[in-house]
Image 1 (cartoon, rainbow, N blue to C red):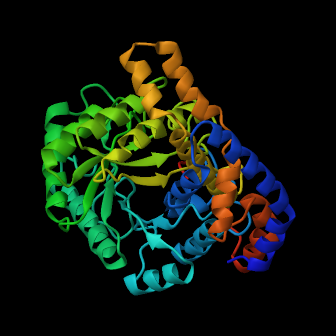
Image 2 (image 1 turned 90 degrees about the horizontal axis):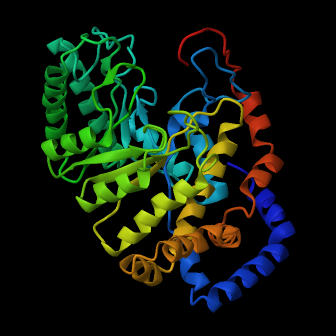
Length: 424
């Protein structure tokens, strides 16, 4: 963790400017009939989960370029995640990926408590062969033509549920790389039937208070067809499984120019929107920092979510899912968490009564202008004030750099090589 004196010193330097900016924004919002304290309170209570794998340097299919202080295992990862939460106060939980993060539940709970975190959804890995598994996932996992391979994938997901139950998780996320690379390689119908049958066995093992989140992806690693390729197929799965099954929306898992906010609205309308993986993309599933390419789209997604807040039973899970190859992953995750909070705050500023009226009157220009009033508002003073009130930093990245945390962990953790080819 970072010395709290460093955070306090950094905050002291910016405190006067923050107060002036916050007061000015408060006066501006008051003229619009908006209570800035209410917005700040809602922002402060919002949290997005950190992916455990996100604190390590990612890579490309050609090479990885690991930086200093790469985490060596789940306990290093939790240390790094604890720093992100300490500074941003926006990331109270961590999502584990098994078997990468496999460890005794008692040790995971103790470490999480020590760094001020809880555990979010569990993630299974049936897209990568493991040394202790007898069957290969080269030709699929839950949809594999081999019954023993399918059962291996089912057993692994049930193992994830059991560990998650012991550490306080309430959800399992399933993503499979199953598909085909050549026309005729697989029978689409039979392949999907095998997936549904295997997924039903995982669903049957869920505790009563758990959610099964299934994730769709248009392509990769299968480049001709993918078993769970879009939100329509994902919705079919959730409807087929039962009440505890819902859809997870990854912002990068769609064709370019797809209207993701409308997908969010449709899934929410029929009670099957279960959660998000927030990131950004330019070309495909790029896993770029959230809000780095299309912050307006992120805002429009949150506009749908704020619209749905009137329903108290609607509570989707929120998680970042990114790959960092040229930045310090901790800095990128902090920046992304703040961007998600920013989109939420901006959506809270939208005049919903006015927007509804313009929509009913078919006044397209004023409807879209009403949305842009929220998006164009600089809500940074609200975000910073919410962090300070919770013990975080006005400028988390500046405080992180001033702390020397990366240099410190680099001295304690062995250097990692990025040599070699293939997916890293």
